[in-house]
Image (cartoon, chains in turn cyan, orange):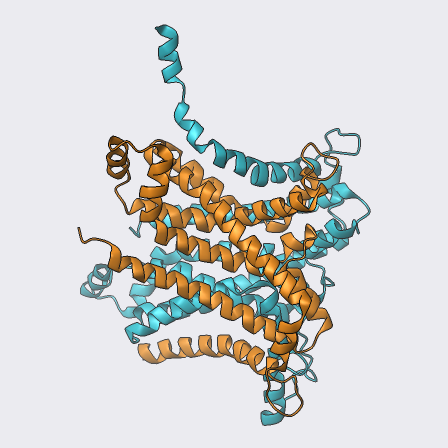
Amino acid sequence: MRSSRLWRALPWNVLGVLPFLLFALLFLLMPTANIVAGAFVDDAGGFTLKNIFNLFTPEIINAFWLSIRLSFASALIGCALGFAIALAVVLGGLPAWLRGIVMTFSGVTSNFAGVPLAFAYVATLGRVGFVTLLLRDWFGVNIYALGFNMISFWGLVAAYVFFQIPLMVLIITPAIDGLKREWREAAEVLGATGGQYWRMVALPVLGPSLLGTLALLFANAFGAVATAIALTGSLLSIAPILLFNQIRGDVLQDPHLGYALAFGMIVITGISNGVYVVMRTRAERWIK
Amino acid sequence: MKRILSWAAIAVGVVYFFLPLVGMLEFSLKMRRGEYSLDAYRSVMGDPQFQATFGYSVVMACLTIVFGVLVVVPTVFWVRLKLPRLRPFMEFITLLPLVIPPIVIVFGYIRLFNTSSWLPLTGTTLGTDFLLMCGYAVLALPYMYRAVDTGLAAIDLRTLTEAAQSLGAGWITVLAKVILPNVLVAVLSGAFLTFAIVIGEYVFAALLDRPAFGPYLVWAGGNKAYEPAALAVMTFALTWACMMLIQLATKFSKHTRMPR
């Protein structure tokens, strides 16, 4: 009797999610944990912080710093332009059909990243690209003579922004939808100007969403590697390419440094995603 | 004034997005000197490497979709029906693939499943293919999970399940004949998104050393002039088709659903 009650009290329901947990454990959690653990272990298998300290060489610091600046610049520009487009579509008094088109197009272009994006970019701004020739033949401007370089910092930012803007549009549009008409009316009744409404009501409400999405876009760019590899042929020293080369051929002469490098990337994307989650909970207080 | 600014924002977006698209389209047509032609496309289509890698990636995408559906649908169903307290945990787990960079995950695979490990998946071709499929399923997990979760939220899960069970259906029958048809649209949109993600994926395939479409794209980018642009146009068309199919599926569902 007693044992049968115990038998029934056991959480048998959990069995139903066991296949999923096994899948997540084997192909998501354990591989990541393995890398993180590897970052804190020396050749003999003992605990060490040496690998983390070894990250602080000029080469690796520069790679991380370049990655951070690249991700931040592309996230900031993507955020600003995406926000402007989303505002225009939702509140700008534009024809309603435009919104559907913009949203579908954003869905497509946010998934059109990686290698094909790099090709599109080369075909546009490469040495014989469409826009390069257009500017040269029609306006007499040779952007390469002016010092433009596709695989420079701003060249890469321009390529990354291509998938950042649509992501911003997709995420921020629901937040703008959540701005209640009553708030604007209440502000106007109390004598607020349009500028005051935006500064004191709308932007504070949207603030957490904007900051959170900025963090998400940052993490999105930070982990991206295919576009950069296709553009630069893995020459550019950004953190993910450094790690890619390390996995391919142990270029750092120390496998443990590779784990530390990967751990550093997890820390950075983890922090920015943490910011996103916190900001989203804060944003949901207003937007229901 | 507001409307002018709005149109200006849209115009900036149009210029920014259409120039590269027009650029790649124009470039892909320029293979023959002095006139537009489809030579680059013909060259791509005739390349046996293209046929092999593209075919490989299509098969991998389909396998990933089947695998993903088999893992996600029963799990979401069970959590919604029996373990609703587990939902925040599930949300967290399925968000992780967006947090951990893919390159780190595949690095972990190489460490964990190498030939001298307890589960030497990378030792055989079949094992590596399976590993690659699991990796793709992980990449698609955030999208698949959310699509199915939203789909299941829209139906009366408990009543449907109890009705089926009182008619004598077992769990598998409930899932396959009652639940799945009801969330088919959600599953389909997850599936097309998975397809779009898998088809051009580079990092997983390159580091696991499998002959997929992504590594072929990079190789073509380094060795050919006009073909990469043609490949980019084709990939863009494919992505567009996937998104259109998602919209179509959603629209289709609005007509089949009974008014309540």
